[in-house]
Image (cartoon, helix red, strand yellow):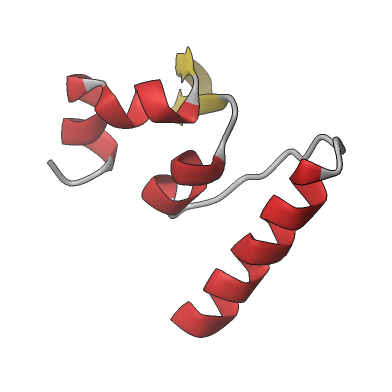
Length: 69
């Protein structure tokens, strides 16, 4: 449910703020990239894009292909 996912992401942010690194594999690219220090976007199992979460969300090709616009 969206409420559970929001709570989970809140806990992930809390853990990350302590300095612990987190590797997350998530289908909701928008929500994951919003909190990611660094993101990797895989296409057919190969790394296609690497950047900060913020930069990936701003990338026109990433937006068009993975973020619905």
